[in-house]
Image (cartoon, rainbow, N blue to C red; front, side):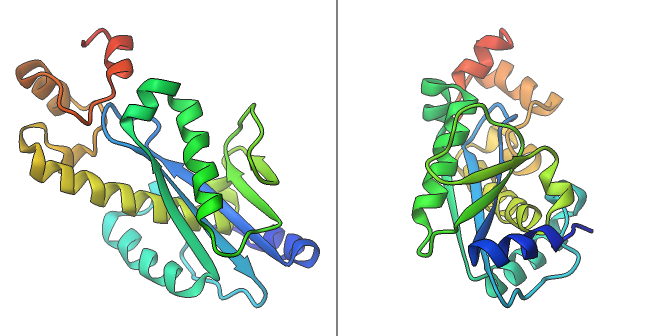
Length: 200
């Protein structure tokens, strides 16, 4: 289970803080999704929060509802597959993260972010490697982003059923690669990823 001690220390200084994480940097299709949660005192903690990758889909869905009901605010934004192709995956991720900050009604004094980024954000931040394993706010954001993106890919599966997006969520599974070979690319595929893998 993730720890909330560091967030409580930051709340004494900043009064309003955030936790942010993204989902979808690795898939061959679909957008990058970023979520940000806002915490203030008194913090209403949701238990069993941990990195979204360590939870099954039913638990993530249940926690999604609890998180959105208890945090002081949240936002979920995307960078499209077109933006991934235009800017590269790292820059598209940062675009999505900046959007998530600007979508918030109440702006945090600082936001904890999972990972490491070389370029500054449009807000005060602290990047923490494996932050979704360590810190409650980042893990909560990872759950929101994961559930939201998975739901998007399930909707895309209805539009492009031949690729199996509902099952693999756009990642490069054997099923997905075989579908690309058979049917070619659809509009939500990341062409730059395909070129790097020499699939297009």
